[in-house]
Structures are given as structure tokens and as C-alpha cells.
Image (tube, rainbow, N blue to C red; front, side, top):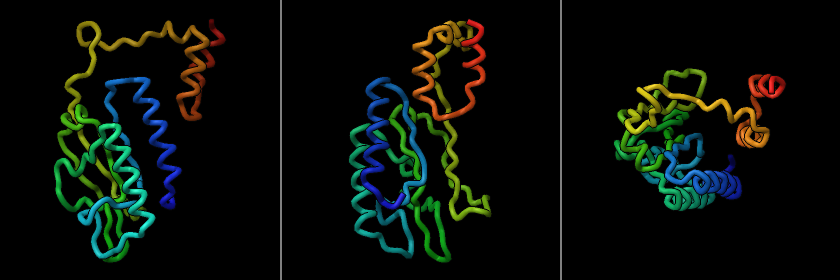
Length: 173
């Protein structure tokens, strides 16, 4: 992104629609936001006015959705995810809802990808409230795949991937 407010508004509008559709769902969003939110997020650099505007939009939308910076829940400083010479920034983030954040066991940054100028954010969660069906066995209701309306809805929600299984199931029905 190039600090485009409209881009972030569009992303957060989609997240808001999903949150409205699935109230109470655990939400984690993450990625390269290409912006910093506080002085603790950078070292040896300045922030541009446009970057500060975008940061404000993201912070407001996170507040509306009840999303918190997962890394900052555990560490007040550091966690840089981008570097160039002696300039460091934390521009890659993971935001989560309170329930999922409470299940976070560990979060770190990992610089082992030598081909990138970004560090990975590595988070480990203990999902205590996972729904269980039967004696600890998760069951998928495959009968839904017989309904064309449901298949169309799934297609609209997914990014373009291989739908071989869905197509094969359609031809069997």
C-alpha cells in the first residue's frame, strides 16, 4: 500500500460486514500495514503525515471492531519487522479480538528469512474454547454441499482457488 486511506477503509468495511454476519466470532487480521502507530514502533526514522493519517484510520477501525495489537499486549517496545541499514520499523501487525488474544501463548518476530527485509510474526495460540462435536470428534456437515445456493455462497467468500472438490460434488449430485 502507499498509505491509501481508501484501501484500508475498504478492507475494514469487509471485515465489518463479516463481523456483522458472524457476531461473536474470533477475529485475527494480520499483514504488512506499511505504517507505524507510535514512537515505540520505529527507530532512526521519521513518519510522514500521510502515514499518520492512515494509522489513525486503522486505530479507529480497530477500536470499532474490538481489535487489539496482539504483539503490544505482551511487549511495550521493539518487535521491529522491517529494517534497512540502521533504520527499523514495526510495520507488520497482528490484530485480534479479546477472546482470541486471551488464548495467545507466545508471540515473537523471526528474521530467518534472509531474502526479505521483513521479519515474520510468529504467534502460538491455545484455543481453549474450540467447539467439539461428539466425544472430541469434529464433524463436517457435507450435506450442505448438495445445496447449490450454499456452494455459490462459498465461492463468493473464497478467493480463487481450486474448486475441484466442489465441482466433483456438483456432478455427483
